[in-house]
Length: 487
Image (cartoon, rainbow, N blue to C red; front, side, top):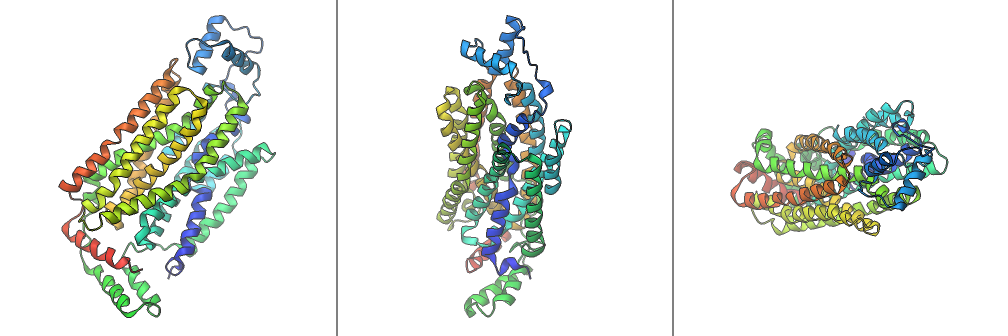
């Protein structure tokens, strides 16, 4: 028997640590790209003019393309001259940023040790290793998250909270890249850091794969309850033991709604769009972060580094924020627990999704003020947005659809999110296409945030008029939920 049923607390803690260290380090792109610029990746894309012989018109055009302003001030002109004269500054240029963002766009759209090794052995002479490296790290991190999500089924009454915490730790794992950056600044090479990450990740994956997690579902199939009855019959009171035995017999009942029916439902399709748009805003924010900071700091490297560090430290609170979101969602689930599906599964997500859309809008509208002081508020809003988007996005799939279909439904959602995230590169191209484009990109993304507020309206309407499950599955779900609360 798998150890997860006997040591569920330890299993949950182990999976949490695994995700915290490795799950979403690809989203620490802001820290990694700072290191890559220091190492002069794609520096040949930049044109440096040490003699300042460029004509006035060309110089103004160059400043416009970097700063996205029509009339550069003398201060900006001075910083631009300094930037041209100092190729060792580490700031780089917009062409260099674009080439690096190509690999980031590919990574978030598409196995872990291989990915870390590719990043470790990438050099300015072999920059293409970043592509498969980031793609493998990103993909395997998502697989790790999806696999660990089943641990939530060991804690039925706080299932969404566990999902939210694991999702939050996934984002906090971006701190691993910040640690790589700090180590790089103190003399440790990127290769050494990633070789250490590779060794530790292989160990944790082996423990999870061969010792803790089962080969199929955790309480995803009722045969697992039968195993629990055999394992715990000495510790469980007779009346609860009989309830578990009765639950084990539910295997003889029909499976309920088919996977195809779930995927073709209006609720699932609209949720895919909602989740995808939030993913596009999420990765676009990360991809544009360096652009915002470089513009607002007048390309002062130390200030950019300072705010990147602040951003990394603020995102540590994602796990705490995800815990709050999980408690909110579980409280709403409890409030509607007396209702029948789909009302009991749809309405709890309405308020959290509405809050998520409004946070996203402010997250992109506030930078329009071009105030560097407000960027800390933007970082906090981003942390809140990420917690709501991923916790509710994944939690709703786990709650509103049959548990045996979660893997497939989440897989399709991840693939769809990857497709939506590819649009970010179009936004990067838009940003550098003409002066002032960054303002329009922010307005567009802010409007997308407001657009996502349509989804909670759809859920509210569907909670009264639509049905996700068949009646047979409704009855099965109620029986399972009542018995699971005794675990």
